[in-house]
Length: 455
Image (cartoon, rainbow, N blue to C red; front, side, top):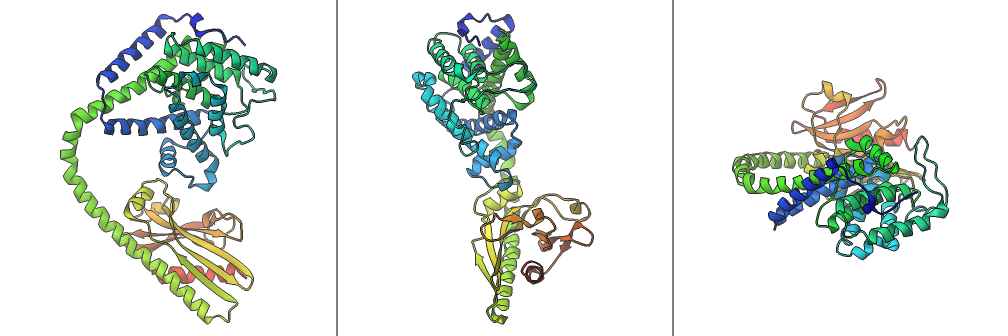
């Protein structure tokens, strides 16, 4: 594998023009400094989500941009079924933060220990056996023209790469960043995570030269792979052009954001202010009415639990452990499709002799189903969901349990009235019970648990 100095690369006219465009945009951004803290926060938030989403998506992560931003905002993994993908998003965000700390330390860009440490962060908790470890096995990429070098060559290639990178400080930074990107991908020093690491090191070099991140987007994946193949054949121009275009897109974000603050903020505030005030009043009232209905649901379960336990000779028992209801901001986040921590409302712990099972009632977003088509008033909302847990097993949503005899799926509010979504076993479909009494919801659920789960 030939990784000779980027100084030997002959740039064509298209590449030179794109690099020139980037320098002009960077100059305009710098001339608008100092940027306001609001502009910086907005850009950093947007850029972090874009970087994490696109870099992971290129590698096959199926989280959407919106889902990625929700995971990053929550700072935790809420959806257990997609734990790995959410962990990849959080890991890459941490790795980006680590790389940002290296910007002012050019010597660290060629430090193998910092290199492997960032890689360890990328795969931590996802593929721990490969995290931060130079591979010792050969790799065959099915269907690819290029195949990674033998493990016996890796130490030599990495040493050569870092020595060359250290001596390239006076060369065109966009070219160096593109070259480093290609070399890291093609050395393929690790069993996994090489692409994400390559894009991080590319951006490290750009930031270190007073530029910004070049976010290669998922929609450019086919072109991206083609540019890497061109670089394999000795032509680095296509990859450098893609990096320059991606960099220009990011620089334009800075300019657009500043312009919006300068020209549009006051104008928009005048239009939106009064409208928002009215919407906020309406939404607060809607939230308070929703709280009232959910309070009645919890109260109904507590009363049912007390009556069953009191009527028993000790063999049958229900305990309800309650938590605070979510506040309005969390309610808003869930109904708009975001994630939020600590959404437990209450646990109902059932016992029949030595057999125990517990149910977690927690808040989440109501998702559209076929039953919604025939039900008026159903729309985006925050609902009360139920999961089942037996012993030390993981909690599982009732809707995800195969052949589950319990019919309750969601409790929600429709037109300020309590509604229940349940699975009709006879018809094998979801149905809605509108304007249902909370006590009926609790009674029927308790009855189903004892007769169909604890017998």
